[in-house]
Structure formats: C-alpha cells, structure tokens
Amino acid sequence: MGRPSRLGDEDRSDYGRALDEVIASPEIRLLLERSGVPGGRLRVRGLAAVAHTTSAADAEYRRYAALRRRARGGRQDAGVSPLSGPGDQERPGAGVLAVLGVLTPVLAAVAAATFLLLGYGLRLAEALPALAGTLVGVGWFSLVVAAVTALVSVVALYRTAAKQSADGTASVPDRYPAVEDAREVWLAALRDRGIRPFLLQQLTEAAPPPGPGDGRGPRFSSPAFAGPDFSGPDFSGPGFEGSGPRGSGRPAPDGSEPRR
Image (cartoon, rainbow, N blue to C red):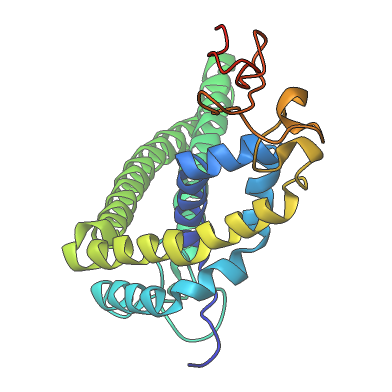
C-alpha cells in the first residue's frame, strides 16, 4: 500500500474539528466520566497521534488530495508561495517595481516641499529672483509627480489585491462539489476508523480496575436463608412431622387428629 500520506497543514484544522466531534459524542463522554480522564488531555493525545489515526483513512485522503489538486489546475495549495525551485515564482522585477511605487511618491513629495520652501523663501527675501523662480517651478513639478505616482501606486495595489482575492476564492476546494464530497468521505473514515478506535483504546487503558463491590451477582445474602442448619421450607401435610409452632403434626396416641 505504500507509505501513508502526510497530513497537509491546511487539513490539520479539519482533523482538529473531527477530533472534537468524536470527543463530544455520547459514547466518549460516558467513558470519560467513568475513567476520570480530562477531555483536554484526551484531545492532546489525539493531536499527538495524528500520524497513527490518519493512516486508517489514507486511501480516502489520497483521493481527496488528488481531486483538490486537479480542481486547482495542478498548482500548489492556495496561499502558499513556493520559496525556491520551479513553480509559480515572482517575476524578477516585481519587487523593484513595488519598492519604486512606494518610494517615488514619498521622495517626490519631500523634494516638492523643499524646493517650494526655498523658492518662496528667496522671493520673500527678494534675493536671487531667478533662482527663486526656478526652485518654485521645480517644486510644483515635483508635487505633480508625487500626486501622479501616488495615484498609480494606489491603483496597482488595488488591482493586485483584487487579483489575489479572486485567485484565492477560485482555489477554495469547497467550491467544487466533487472535492467537498471526497472531503466528507475522508472525514467520516477518519472519525470512524482512525480517531474513535484510538480514543476508545486510550480510555480503556485509563479505566480503573473493578473493585470488590463492582462484581456481578447479589450484593448481600440473608443469614436466615444462608445458615448451615437451613434445609428448606416446610411443606408437610397432615399426618407428617412438621416444623410449625403449634404442633408436630403426629397422630395422637388415641388415634384422634391432632389439634390445629
């Protein structure tokens, strides 16, 4: 059958929910009360045994993972960008353009403020009118550049966010009925064949041994019916020796009936 599949990081939340559902079932709750094991400790054991419990539903998980990859067009999981190697890598100039898109408006605004302050300062001082006019012109030009680049950066960021949101929505496996059905089949197999038997085993091992008063059978016996001199009730009829309190039940010597 091969080596069991390793549970993906995005599936661990589903595993945790399945574990909580099994722990909350009436069967497990009753055993928890009898054994005295805290529910939190049992959950920790279930999380630690994820490799053991998921192997029981490995076939269902492989099918679910294959359908999910096929629904996503063979790409890697949504929201996880590859760090190295082949795949959907970032374009070489994407990082530089992003940095320029952020820095250009800031630098242009700082330059505009500087040039305008110097230019108008020289005009107020009535010194170097030619230089003052040049500084004022450069300052207004820098201000326009800052405004345009800021607008372009905002539009680019909005488009990037919209594209990533659309890609993430299209990659959600719950949007595909076949993938969702395979997921439910895997979770059912995981609960019934993996998690529940493991928890039952843990609770059985943690259950205290039965005490002297837990044996099956009568818990008391009456001394009147358990003494060594007791032989049975007296069902003797007339003419036989009885054990009643009024007489022995023997015929009288003169042949008359005994008084009752």
